Every structure is written in C-alpha cells, then in structure tokens.
Image (cartoon, rainbow, N blue to C red; front, side):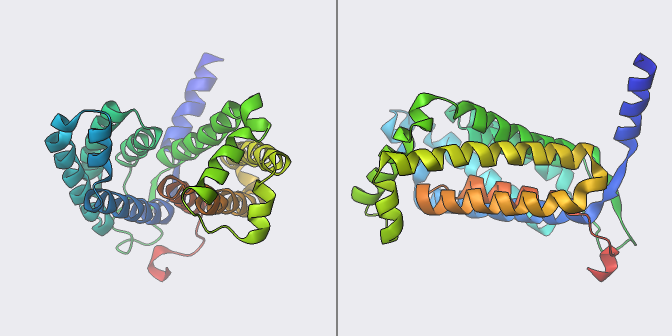
Length: 271
C-alpha cells in the first residue's frame, strides 16, 4: 500500500502540463498586484493604516517592502528570471503578512512560492512547451481550500441571517453614498433579501470548491467543469466588487481560476 502511494505521488510530481496556462497566469497575477501596490503607495493606504494603529515607526520598512514588490511584479510581468523574483516577492509579501496578518498577503505569499517552483518563461521558443503540473494542481487545490473555508466560516447565525450583509451594504449605501441601482438598494434594505444573498454565497463558494477539486481529480471531465468554474468565479467576485467594494483579491482569484484551469490545445507558437 505504501509503495503504491509513493509510486502514485512520484507519477504526479513527474506529470507535465501546458506551460501556457502558467505563463498567462504569471502575467495576470503580476498585473493585478502591480496595480494594487502602485495604488497603495500613491494613495498612502498602508501608511494611513500604520498611523491608525499607532505604528508610524514602521513606515520606512513597509514602504521599502512595497517598492521591492513593485519592482518584482514589473519584472514578473516581463518574464525574466521569474523563479528568483517570485521568491523575492514571496519573502517581501510574507514580511507584510507578518506585520499586518491580512489573508490577502498570506494568499499572495503562497501563490508566489508555488510559482517559483515552475518554469513560466520561453513560451514562444519551443513547440508545445510543458511545465511541471504539480505547482498548478497545488494552486488549484489552494483555491478550492479558500472557497471551502470561506463557505464554512459563513455558516453562523450572524451571517446566514443576513445581518452582516445588511449592516455592511447599508453602511456603504448611506455613509459612503455607494451608487447601487434602485432595485438593488430596495433588495438590500430588508433583512430577508440579505439572508438570501448570504445563503447564495455559501452555496456558490461550496460549489466552486468541489468543482475545483473535481477538476484536479477527474481530468476526463475538465471540459465540462471549467466553464462552470469560470462562470461561478466571475459571478461571485463581480458581485463582491459591485456590492461590497472588494476588488484586488477577487480579481486575483478570477485570473487564477480562469488561466490555471485552461488547457490550450494549440501549440504555443500559434497562440
């Protein structure tokens, strides 16, 4: 039994996949977070947070870390020595994650570390270029875990009753003057309407988690599973952006699901 498990694990590690999906994900991931870090520096987002928590003494260290991240992401967008710059980006973002304990930063660190383990370059220099499949599979399993844990954490009376969404969305509508359409504003003005949205969020995130798991473990069904995954991830994060003002984390997960579940049939030379 043990030898069979070791053999299967070795076969999984040796499996190759089309490099194009990893290459395009590397570019999209770098673009999303480059925009985030540039805007964060320009609008002093993290700096304002440091003052609010009484830690302005960390300004120099944090700004230096942000500059390193911007530099890494610009290089990763180009695609030069990606493995080393992903490792540097991992270290810089992990430091930010240590300081602020924000899930987005921890997520970024895991993605950067996994992408540092595979080749995402030289797409046009080879015919049908391949890369190791295990980092891609690990990234998809990571995404499934994010949705599964998120759905599980929502299984509490405060969220399922619609109370959390009611407070947040109505605060945005009144205090922040968020321009919701009139029909949507009327919908979220009731606890029942927010409760329906809460249950829908749990169902959709759970479905996404199990579909992504199926994508990894049932490769013969990937052509059916991928459109469902892409549709659900677009729906949940576009609604999150419009309704709850959540942008960059959602954008990153959209490109992660879209590109990593994509298996191009044509050679890279024709892409």
